[in-house]
Image 1: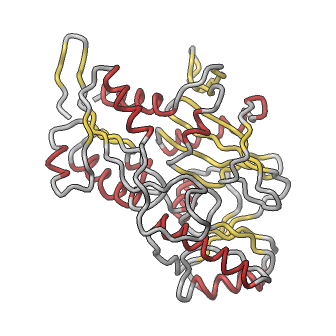
Image 2: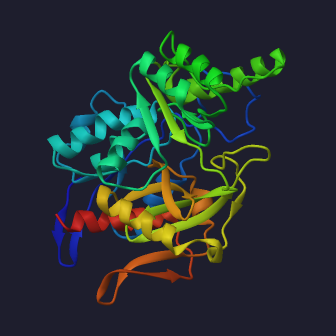
Image 3: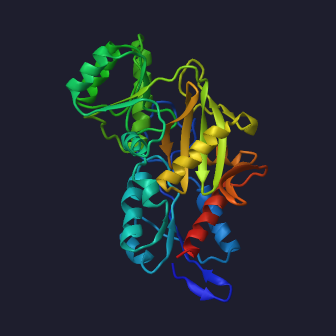
Length: 366
């Protein structure tokens, strides 16, 4: 993007990415069907950013990150925004393209490397959060089958088994005993698994669920097999759901999610409570503190209680915009003389607007 100095400041030519393959809404396709190609649907973020760019007199245009001459198209530009989803090819391409622009061309990009390298990798998130001393459930990562079997033979259950990839509650399963753990250890350290399926007494139900799980895995990560590790988390009883806090700059959007009926998972349930009086200020403060430590400008956190302490279950860059935008307001950090103070702003603000404004501020600091 070509910035030109004007009497009122800078005119920023933002580079906005093309629409890539995006998964349709839940219910668009029969359960268990494996889709070779995801449908192309409108990008609300892209359209919103284009409208905001026009309102701010920003020189913005769309570029194709998949084009052979993509790098030539962005040379000399100052910024690129790409709000990608959790499915391939989006995050896989983003992990290759955006750090190259940020590092090689010194370009302001959204998301930046510190927002990006751990995306769709819960094991990387575990190591990252642990190094910063962020409170989490007790977590164990094994890279050796024997060590994993020995641990599960002597430990207490239930434990939560997760694959490194997954979102909306996928690839998460509850292990109730050592026999179930051994079943998954053999598979994960053997031929691998494309996704976690629940084990049913009914063969028909098991086949149906496996088709659904494999279908989701094909869309999310191109059918790659997960193998060579075991990732376990402590099960936290007494939680009827979780709290999702999405940090965008100095703003925190928060809502509660109830567990699915008869399930221990809240992520992906769609059972949302936006009432701000139900949100713990301790959870909001923890989310702000994690974002500060990680130096991220956009971060979605799943939080639960471990007895009396709030802990971070996992992180994400992507979020469901309609749930965030439905928040009646947001918490703002830093006002007056206290940079750590937070207050409730009783007014909704679209997440796309917040991201765009922060990006313009980042460009202005260059």
